[in-house]
Length: 264
Ligand code: CO8
Image 1 (cartoon, protein in one colour):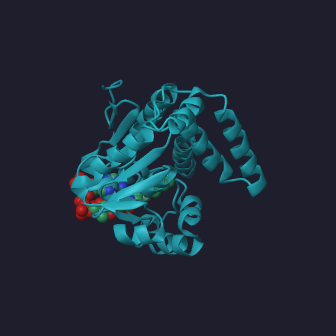
Image 2 (tube, helix red, strand yellow):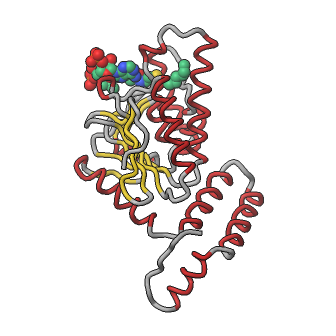
Image 3 (spheres, protein in one colour):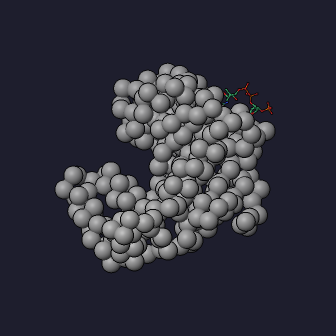
């Protein structure tokens, strides 16, 4: 099913509960510009409004790139104030993505640079094709990262590796990204989307409220001290016992059958 029409991205509900958002500006390697951010925000509204949504997959059109960064031709003539506003637009959007109630997987199918890498890191995890290339090459352009890399990359792979990537602009291939913990899995390019759909299918079979509450506890807890984070988990755990899916999940286990989750 196609949702409303978009120009710079494709956005569709491909299977029950699984949305696929494809950044679609292949002529510029899916570079992020104002238009794509505007449409991205609309797509997030659609996902957030759908109580049946289970998983969001994000990928790039074509075989060469996920996203090769923010659009350099659009950024070139910005003033300081405009540069900060552009950065703030992306920061707000990526934080919304991070806080989306359902899991979001970045399906990285090629170059994943600058703002592209920052977008991927705002997803819950990254899977990549063997030809994927990660990097924060902003220093080559005389700018710092502006969409969150100085913060998220350090948290993901540690400050020393983040520092190396950001101050040298060095590209990191898929296997190195895997070793560094930036990426969860690497697949041959022709299998990447099938693997993404298989992961999404697995998540869709689980208790939907439990999945949402688990994500919420992990994301919210990440910026809290251990005691406060564990409190969030206790509350989430307690809340599950008010749901039909907890009754069904436990009954199915004890009756030695597969659970049939219909929602919270
Ligand atoms: N923006 C605009 N156009 C781009 C971008 C980009 N980021 N990346 C590639 N393109 C365009 C190229 O200009 C080219 O267009 P054309 O065919 O019209 O000449 C087309 O895509 C294909 O690219 P190449 O011919 O360069 O393809 P190659 O295979 O030779 O190289 C690379 C691929 C290595 C990915 C190369 O294109 C490249 O280095 N791209 C730029 C990567 C980069 O520097 N990204 C970081 C951008 S800055 C950023 O993301 C910071 C975000 C925070 C901003 C803060 C707010 C102000």
